[in-house]
Length: 120
Image 1 (cartoon, one colour):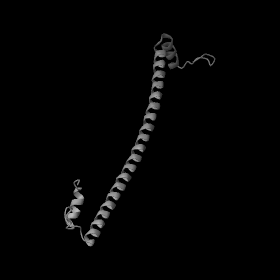
Image 2 (cartoon, one colour; image 1 turned 90 degrees about the vertical axis):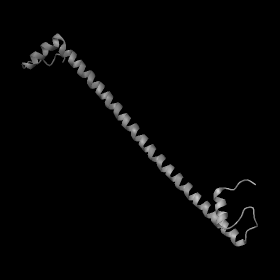
Image 3 (cartoon, rainbow, N blue to C red; image 1 turned 180 degrees about the horizontal axis):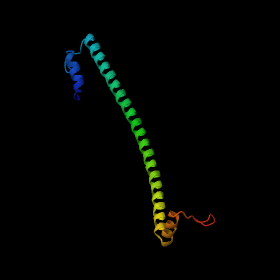
Image 4 (cartoon, one colour; image 1 turned 45 degrees about the vertical axis):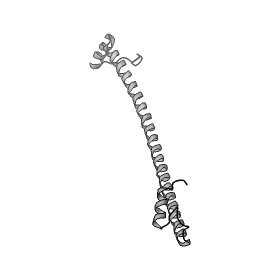
């Protein structure tokens, strides 16, 4: 005979039933079945609680993941905006650093502006 599960061994012992001994009384047999049924019910409840916990955790993780994706997308867009602003600033700096740009800037500081037909 294969060794009994420790929980079953404890249940038998509490009821005074020996696995290798006599056949238990009808009353002991019903008590054993009741204890075994209660154990199954508790195991089912524990499994349900564990599954429910897993489902809730999975949903929360999915929501967090989606939030991270959205944040990553926003950061990427902001990064592109900053690259564009940096390129424009560099272009402006290069234009102002050129000889014609310095002269134009000096004239504009003194109140002169080119005619509207000139490209700006």
